[in-house]
Image (cartoon, rainbow, N blue to C red; front, top):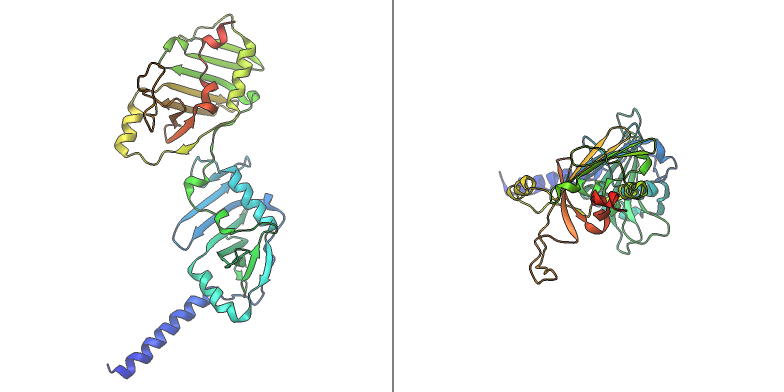
Length: 338
């Protein structure tokens, strides 16, 4: 093939590729959709988040109104969900994209964006899809494009949330671990049916509390009923399970390290059962301090006094803080010494 033929053919291929690149974001419809905000987010039952890098996460609302990461038992981070729901109702067009910049912005959106698909109950296809691109140089807004069902806007816009300075695409993160709720146990005392604590350091401090219509039963290690105990102490103890959060998911361990930890003897085993008979099992393990800590007698402390490892439901290995969780591990003598 001669050089004269190669050059025009190369240009033709490049032009075709560029046109394909651009038309990916050009209109299936000549309507320039600019109504990014909508009021009723309560109707949403599904949100798909994906990036041009290939990362993706899908969230779903179940019958009880609780949001989960789809296909899992992981509840959704309420703060993150609340923020994007608020964004759906607030974001607005800051300004039109100038005609001379239109192709450039479309190219930017095509090459890098976060895609947000929204579903109502019964929808097989999203009723709205947002393509959120990079922010402008002054960080006053993001380039974005709106699609309604199968009809995509003919033009992109620069959008923002009034009163917010910064880039909004970070609100729509796609990391699944980041979407997991930080709550481990969040039960009001009236929702608790029983609490069982196994103390492996002092087995005689093991106990079970059963609750039935505001009447308490306290059982010892042998499951024998304790006749005299402080009911006010029990009431205070049940409040401990209202807000138990994790500090972080453990991701730095090798499979061998994880297996060795889980197969070791825990410090405690806590089982909380709610009125719907849903059990949350948490095993607490010693966490070696990140740096050497000395006890009052000058000896190295084997366990971090401020943090522990915890295995939730036999699956998730997390780090918890003693400050938030300490009251959950009250010994049997706490209820019987008065």
